[in-house]
Structure formats: structure tokens, C-alpha cells
Image (tube, rainbow, N blue to C red):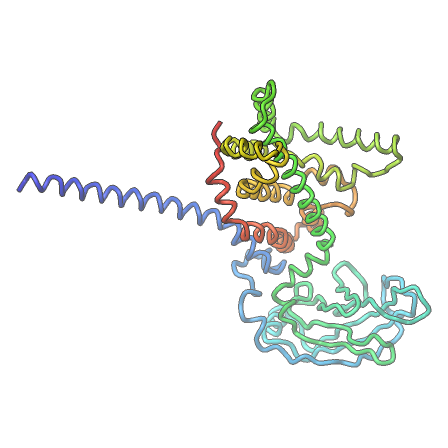
Length: 438
């Protein structure tokens, strides 16, 4: 009986050790996952905060509660009596007589009422509206408007509405017009000027994202980043595929030595190559300008932002390792059918290498999208600057508008997350099946 009890105790001892080891391993992984996700949670929360909420280190933003959305007054359309804006200061140039009107706000939401009471801001209050004509023609077509509270001075934080754009004035308790009321010019006819007053939930919830998109000119930056990223990916895939195939399937003198030297370039820090790359761009710019008369063909153009990154050692190494695993019998069969290296690459190797090629696309897409230092060096205008540079516009000598920076960061992250979400299966397969050993 004692002889049977020893194996049972040994089995139980093994089970306990196995359970403790797994518990310890999963505990470490869970703690690591929590630590890794904390910055993302902080960024997302901050993106919904007001400047005041972030400054006072308020943990949970009001926009993610029900308070700003309940008890909102019903929208209304107001016919505003417009008069010449003779008592306004810093009025922008208007091709027609600038007009001014007043809207009285008697009712607000429960949330805004509490904010106003806390800051001793009495109801009712007056909203001043300035209309200017920015169109150079003979018609009084007012297309740009300024909305203020308790001031008739056009300053930095005055809300500007173009066309039928929606926005709210800045007042005590409303960070950049976030909590309402929100105004939209329905009819800019001077004789029948109609304004719609509402409490728009879209602006209350996404205010920081809307302001970041408008103020930092994210539309231009996003289109620039998209074009730069796509062009870089296409260049990397084409060049890396050709180079990797040559190193993996073609035999020529010094191939292995050349590949070793080429791979060693991956060990050079990017900071070391920054100045040499910049001097090359300057030299190419001078050459094209003096030889062909082409100004800004390299500097401050998409060429400097894409061409230097259209091939990198890691992508060639990754694809070369996978290409080397393809059986030689396939090439022999293709050779019998009359196929050469290029046809074999296009019709056999590339279809079999979908997973590692997708991995190259994801890695280089992320690298190209997140470029910041290089675009700042080789560009001097907004013409080709990417979205990462747009985030810098929220950093001034006075202070950094962190809540807008985080909102812009969330916007810049969405395309990368979408790319990974739709390609994660292929990406994981590429990492798992591609040999990374020498």
C-alpha cells in the first residue's frame, strides 16, 4: 500500500507545482497587460476632458457621463436683427459692411446651469454675433461669423463659424463652447438673418476631436500621411521583394558576404544616419535645381519623405528568410515550363509569401505613419507635413493643450488600429511561419 501512495503523492506534488507555475506566469502576463494598457486608457480619457478638467487632474471627464446630455433645452430658430458692427474691435476684412447682432440666452441645460452657478455667472446672458463677407464680389453674401459672450473684441478664443458650420461661444463654464448653446447660421440674408440654437450632443461628446481636426488642419495632414505611407509601403514591398529574392534564390559571387554587410547596416542607430541623409537630400535638391531647374523636387516634397525609406534591411531579411524555405523543386518545375526568375517570383514566390509580405506592410506602415523628426527636418511648410507634425501645433510657449494633443493622438491612431485589426490574422501567421534564424 505504501508503494502505491508514493506515486500518488508525487503526482499531487507535480500538479501543485504546475498550478503554481501557471498561476505565477498568468499573473505576470496580466500585470504586464494592465501596465501596457494604462497609457492608452489615460490618453483616451484625456482626449475627452476639457482644459480645466485636465489642469485640475480630474479623473473622469464630464463628457463621458450623462450629466451634459440630460435636461437640454429644445432647439430653436431665431431671427436676429443685424446692424452695422461699428463698436467691434479687430474685425476681419469684409467686402461688405460687417454686421452685428445679439442673441439672449434665457435657458440652459442643468449641467451648464450648475457650472454657471458655481462660477457666479448669472443668467440670462447675451451672445454677440458678428457677420463678415469674405467673398470678393459685388454681392453682400456673408459667409464667416464670430460668436462671443460679454465682449465685442475679436481675440484668440473667439469662436469662428464658416458657412453653416456649428459651434458654441466661450463663456464661464463652457470650455471652447463645448457644453452649449451651439449656433448655426441657417440664413445669412441681412434682412432676414436666421440662426439655429441647439445643444448638439455630437459637439458635446466629440468637441476636442472636432476642434483638433479644424485647428491643426488635420484634414491636410491626414491626406499627406496617407499618401506618404502608401507610397512608402509600395516602394518597400517592391524593392524588398526583389532584393530578398536575389539574396535567397539567386547565386552570385560574394552573395553571403554582401548580405552580411547589408544586414549589418540595420545595427546602425537612426540618429547616426540622420545628418548624412539630410546632406544627401540637400545635395540632390541642388543638383535637380541647377541641372533641370526643378525647385523643391526633393526638399519640402514627398520625395524626401518617402524615397529614403523605400527599402530597409529588416524587411529584406524577413522576406529573404521566408523565400529561402521555398523548395527548389518548385523552381525546377517552373524552369521546365519556361519560366525565369521574374516569372517564378511573381507567380509562385509572391503568392506563397502573402503572410510575410503583410508583416512587412504593417511594420513599414507604422514606421512611415509615425515619422516625426525627419519630416520636421526636410519640410518647411504645411504642404507635405504629416499628421504627427500637426500635433505640435497644440504646444505653445504658454502651455501645451494636452487634451487636444491626446484627441489628435487618438485620431492618428485610428488608421493604424484599423490596419492591424483587418490584417492581424495574416500578420500573426507571418510572424509564426517566417524563419528568423540565420
